[in-house]
Structures are given as C-alpha cells and as structure tokens.
Length: 366
Image (cartoon, rainbow, N blue to C red; front, top):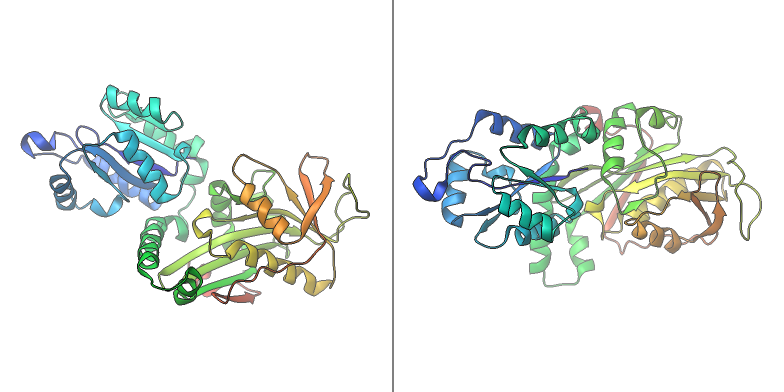
C-alpha cells in the first residue's frame, strides 16, 4: 500500500519553473487531488531542487503548504530527501510513491531506492492516479474514517511530542507520564468496521494476521469477540489504534509440541498501529483483552495464531514477553503460541487504562 506521495514541484505539482520567473500555476486537478489524498489518509511530502525560502513562500501563497509533511527542499539528492522523509514518518520505503518530470531524477531514485515506486509526472500521470484511487489501493477508496481524515494531524502532533521529548530534562518514563496517555479498550461495533479494515491493511510490525481483513470477517466476530483500542494524550486524539479478533469457543485441534488439549480462547488476529510503538500500548491492550476474556471463564487457556512476515518480529517479541510459548501450528500453516506464564506488561504508571463495554461517544459521532 502506498502510504506517502512525494512530489517534485516544477512541472510536476505546479506548471512552470519557480527559479526562472516565479510565475507558476497550480492546476485545479492537482489541488483537488491533494485534498482527496489528504482525506483518504495518504500522506504527502516534497523532494525538490529549489531555493528553500522561495519554494516555501510559493506553497504558502497557493494555500497548500499544510498538506506536506517534512518537505525536503534544497539542492541535495532527491533519493536522500526521500530517505529522510521515510525516516521522519517511520514508514517503509516500499510504501512511498515519487512523482517527477525528470527522467534523470526518476532513474537516480530508482537506482538508490529500488523499493520506491516512481512515476513520470507527464507520461504516467493517469497511471499514477489510478494506482492511488483504483482497485490496487482498495483501502484508500473506502469511506474516509475519522483516523484517515486526521492522519496528517496525527503526524504533526507526534512531531510536536518528539520535539518536546527531546527538550525534556527528565527520563523517558517521566516524559511519558507527563503526556497523559489514555487507553480505552472496548468491544467493537458496526461503526468501527471501516477503521478496522483500514488499520489491518496499513499495520506491518505489531500484527499477527494470517488472512485478509474485510467487513464480512469483522461481522463474524461482532458477537463479543472483536475488541478495539482507542488512544489519546495531551497532544491529541489518535482514534482506534488497535484491534483484536478472538474466539471463546473450543478451537480446532492443533498439531502441538509440549501441550495437550484445545484452547478455551484463541486470538485469531491482532494488530496495533506502528505509530504508537514505544509507549507500551500493544502489551497493555493485549493484557486488557485477556482480562476481558477471562471474566467469562477465569483461568482459561489462551492461544494466539501468528503468521511470520519480514516485518512483524516486534509482535513475536511481544507475545513471548507476555508468556506465550510455541505450541505447534494449525492446518492453515500459522504458528500457534499458547500463554503459559501470565506476565502483564508494566506500563510504568504512564498509561491510564479504561475498559468499557459499549461504543464510545466519539466513535458514535464518527
């Protein structure tokens, strides 16, 4: 999935060359495209060879400066600029698309960053648009969720949080306590499904998924086995950042190693947004789900299906830190981990946790 579009400016985003006469024009089609991608939650940035002050001034005059996160404006390599953008956004290079009118610039980026999708602003404009709005980007053409509409603001809030953390004189734990982080865990409802599908399609690190998540799959768990986690702090409301699919009934037999019998509850799918990593959210959310499952049947045995990818090692580390150990694999080829040593994640006192049963007022509005 393309999570970020990086634009060149001259003869790409706008018509004309800023350094030659300053008289550039932003086509209405490009402006509408910027707004549509922003609402769909696709981030946007800039990598261009231009004088920084003049380019920033022109972006402000055109009323579009706010759409671009961490713009790289200057005379450095665009490949280096794109790498800097990926690091600032904490996303993979393979989730970036780069648009430019220069074959040389496109070739250079493709050579140094072969995982970045490159498009010629003239010859491939229609192909580029189709890539972001067509069937290949299925999640991005769904009705906009609160989280997708707010994604750019989330990143700006996160940048401000990081800036304040760097200036903070105390420890990281003390800073996190100052942030006023609030986690709400609840059973999900019908109104959550667009966001759940979106989150499942975007998350790569803290996830166990072995199958595609869509609305029909979600509805199969709405009888009490679908859990959502919402997060907020003094920098803003991040919306739904985690989801868990669990079944309480007897699970199918597993080919086991070192254990016997079937689990009383199985975590089929679990994910937490990569944006909130490093704050203890994933471990606390997992423990809250286990506590909610345990309410109906104290002392139940819990298993979790896990499908390894090249990016979700953090999820495996989390499972092991929570007392899950390998118990074989299932008929679909997913690894199965069983919780044998309950080990709640201490959050150092910086997370305020609330467990509730119904829809929150904010999600009902969204």
